[in-house]
Image 1 (spheres, helix red, strand yellow):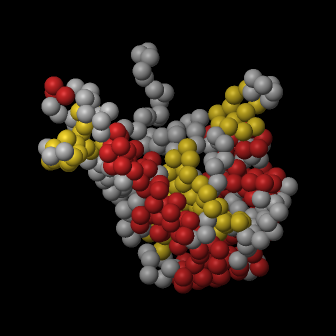
Image 2 (cartoon, one colour):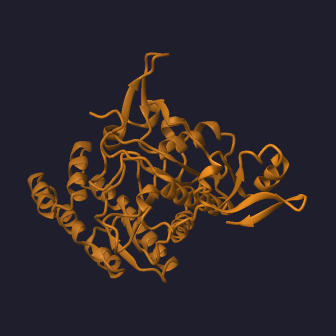
Image 3 (tube, one colour):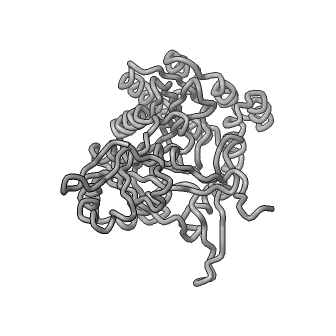
Length: 383
């Protein structure tokens, strides 16, 4: 193997794409800042148990582990930033009993890619709100997610809504144990309706629960699905609340294209309620995902309601607007010492000044002006 080759699904980011990513990241963080979200920068490396690998099998499989040569303990390279932000809210910001609005932008590493077109090093960017259980917090975050996608040139995305609380309410009412619930959830996530039916029939559940679980994968489409669900699903308080929340989201984003899917349950184990995602016709998977994960902080000592969203900015390079390279000012290496003060003033004003070490070539890539001494002063002349 050549020494310059990178691991599979790992890639360099070259100048033009790097400009696009950094420009978009700056704009997104500025958007979050004016909405009251403060930036946090968790470390890339933590003790693996702090990354919640012990409670989330999917997250555990994604996490790359190494041995800490200082302590001998197992370390993990983060595969998701949300557990880290939950730790920060629960521990480092525990003095604040009110709301914490936090945002982040950083690389995560996956042991395996999520798909054939995915990188193992996503640039995860997102925002999270801790301390408020009301649906208005979710509405705020969905609005922020859609504004984020507008910044990265995604116009008119479809908003997809689901609610994992409906599945959990049915599983509890039907008396499923943890293993049964996990198995059934996996089948739901795979959209395998026939396997769901076969599974619940084998367990010999009461007919109302069999009917409900079989119906759940069919409850998708326009907002009329919510009324159908009220008719088909058992009258459980948790389900009524979930459907009401979904109705409120639909009302808040009435001008958007909305898709309801009550069996859209492809989430991390820590999600507890409302789920939302954004899709575009020219992209095979969700552009951004989010949802509610109340109580995640209990693993770090403080249980709080929480909701948030994130997406992989590297995934969206194809959508990002081009960012032109800053046109430079050439200065001959022979003139540079005498022009030192002028060069620093130009750079302080935001100009790109490049010292030309090969003046015999008479060309410096990316420069459209030259700083020369004329008429007893330094002047900029076009090239």
